[in-house]
Image (cartoon, rainbow, N blue to C red; front, side, top):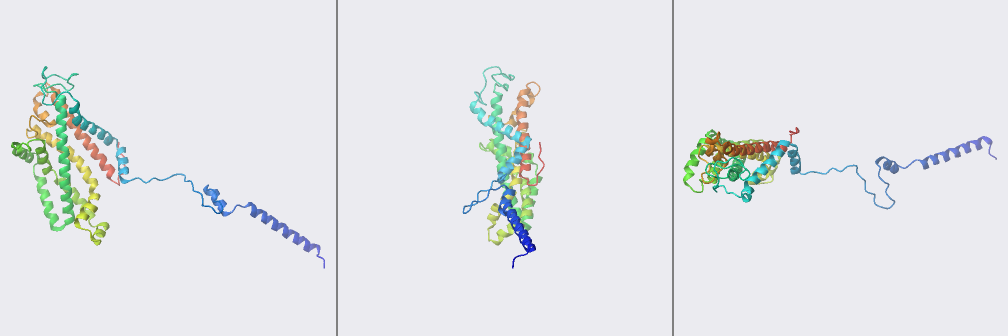
Length: 348
């Protein structure tokens, strides 16, 4: 039976709808194409490896020391002080090798001569070139201060580690010894010991003064390290080290020591400043470095009576002492900010 006109019309409309749906499906991009359009990544080729995706930026991980260096560089005063301190060290240690006069050489010309081109820092009352003496004095003062900082820091750090880790009665006993050392009058005891060792040829030099100061200056850093260790010894990583059978020495020097390095480094820089000022005080009292050698403190001591008549003899060594002390303090301030992970404020 032939189809009626109504059935033919319905079939034609259905065919038209199917064709339109096919056209829409052909025009619509696949899901991969949509994802590629969103991310900007090219489509993978059939049967091949997916192409590399280009990133808009790449995060480069920085080491801990690079992070510390970046924080320190943002501290302007500390950075300038570090450069100035390096220049003073080069002046003191390399200068005598390049300068034409020695600190013990007497000048044959006029004595007590003010600064000139031939003698930039002038001469003293017996014809010594003051520039050569300042370079030698800075060299000896820096030797003393650096030796004191290293030795006293090592002694105090080990002492504080042992005391804080031991705890209990041992901690109380060791801390009472620290309290006793802290109550001693530093300058008086150092002067007595320096005078006692003055007859020994080795200990009467800068080395003797440095040993005396190192023996007396270790106690403050021991208290600092002990306080940090007390807060660390109950932490999970220490308990894990105990559970794994780590020895006491390994726990002390492998696990605890790296975690107290920040306060130790900062206090070591402070000790450089304390040592050079204490050596200056001892030399000013006549218990420092003995002649014919000199230090910055002895130069001030020997020329204290010339402060009004020949001021260059007194003030030039004094300026170098102030520069060394201030630069070390600012360097310590910058290291404290750089080593503190909670420090977000940038100083200028």
